[in-house]
Amino acid sequence: MRNLPSRLLLTTVLALCCYPGHLAAAENFWSSIGVRGGLSADGKDHDLIQGDAFAVYQLPWELRSRSGWGVGTQLELSAGVLHGSEKYGFIGSAGPALNLGRPQFPLALDLGLSVAVLSRDTFGDRDYNGYGQFISHAGVDYRFSRTLGLGYRFQHMSNAGLNGRHNPGANMHLFGLSWYFAP
Image (cartoon, rainbow, N blue to C red; front, side, top):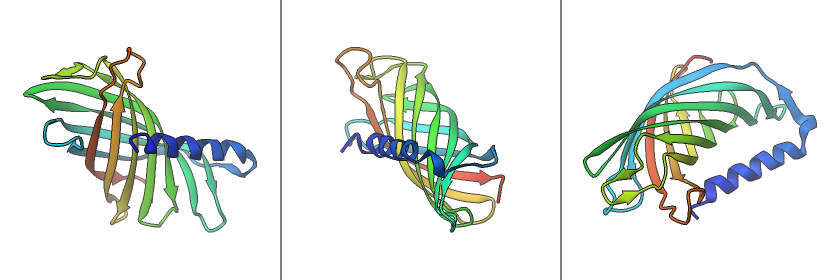
């Protein structure tokens, strides 16, 4: 169950690659900025908190039906802070994401995979075994006006086993507020 966002993202990307004739060029632009924060989803024994600012750049590839439903591609960037066991550290990430929905419809599904950099890899007795991490996420965005939206994402961060056998990872529930630039 922990790898569900990664598997769903991989399945969607493979499906898009199988149908390249349906891909269309779209306009690329900075679509939104925002802030988000949340808590560890790993239980009471782990007090990890994350807060960050993010920006979303709309990439030029999308797959849409005639009604507008489909998949858009994005690049997500974030910079923020991790706090746990009375220690603070920087977290920054960048990576591709897919936005499933329809323009002008207020609800959309967001799936992504990013590379992350931490300024510290130890928070109390929790050792993430490396400054380089990978983040996969699945979430939902609700746009309640032309310029404002709320979001929720479930995020998994780990070193993907690249730094040896120790790969503890962290699961987070994150809630965000977005400001949109485009209609």
